Length: 91
Image 1: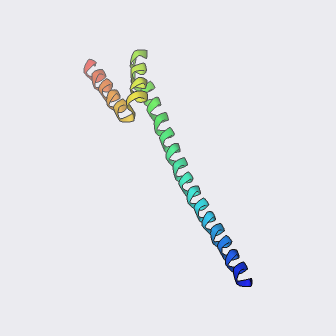
Image 2 (image 1 turned 60 degrees about the vertical axis):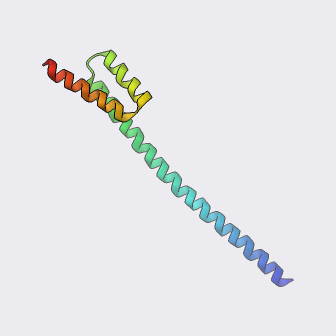
Image 3 (image 1 turned 60 degrees about the horizontal axis):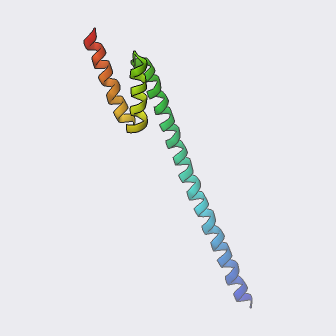
């Protein structure tokens, strides 16, 4: 009887230890995701500031934001570079 209780106790303990380990792993993954999200938000804020700084017309700003939303950061940066090139050629 005592042996059965000891086995049950050990099984419960190992289950709790396993659950605690899984919780710690999830907390670590959450921390990584939160950092990635903060980095993403910072990049987007920097890009939006660049859009406001580079674009000389509201239509260019709208186009840049549309590209950012639909095609992503890299496409938006390419568009902004093309706007800068056109501005340099105009001067």
